[in-house]
Length: 368
Image 1 (cartoon, one colour):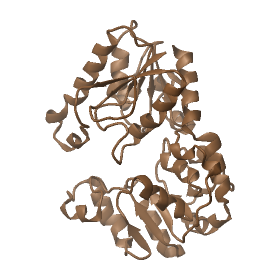
Image 2 (cartoon, rainbow, N blue to C red; image 1 turned 30 degrees about the vertical axis):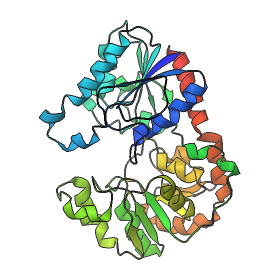
Image 3 (cartoon, one colour; image 1 turned 180 degrees about the vertical axis):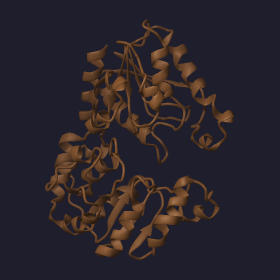
Image 4 (cartoon, rainbow, N blue to C red; image 1 turned 60 degrees about the vertical axis):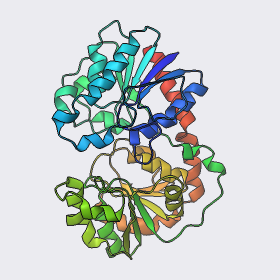
């Protein structure tokens, strides 16, 4: 089987730091190739993931262009998609696996009945794009999958009619996690992720003071990846405004610290050393990559029981969940009852790249 995987024009695969979808693609593709799938990757020129063929219009990722006016950037995705369509005309692609928000799905439907079958993975909040999702018709050729059952349950009927199920996200950290030696836990709690209202860092920071636990916030604030960057940030950026209005008043450098974006080994060490990873969600998280990574690193999850969290966390065994925001502080204190080894064993069983790739291969076979 030859599959064209469309990662989009925004970031290289794997990304150099932040890049949720690109990290998913970088996790999936090597396992697909191990299973015998030939992969043509539609990406940008500085992607260095080994594939059978690379397709790129742009030499580097165009993510920075997203802050420019629409009339200056509206050609980026069409240029990328046009190259994809030209490649399909060669006639040797058996299936398209698309990861490009909105435009990817529209392109797949517009290709018509003679194009290869297609699977479009939904990585985001399905309340977005109501005009597209609410009227979508991909015929019998275009199918979609979610990254959690909860995510698909919120899809408009027209989109849900094209769904073939969900595949939970994976982490390379889960491979062999059950054989990894224990890590000595330190006293802090970590919140990992982009700082915005939906992630609830303001709630976490307030609870740290009220319940008496040390908190480390790790993740960007809008375009700002380091504390010094905030001085030059646009105060009208919604995430920057949320930081200044709701989070910063609780950040004292002692009880609550913000360390900016943390990647690679530094991120892994930060999460592995935490006594709990806190997810005080105020929205329905679709996929939960950071949840899976925390479990793989042996760190129990404490969070709001919404979105994908009840699917990923076994309450009382790998974490503690609640529907009461105020109760999160007490659950953080109780997280010491969760065994690190249970978290790592569950990750090794459910969230490895091999498990995710096998699930996708079954979907491919079902729609090809």
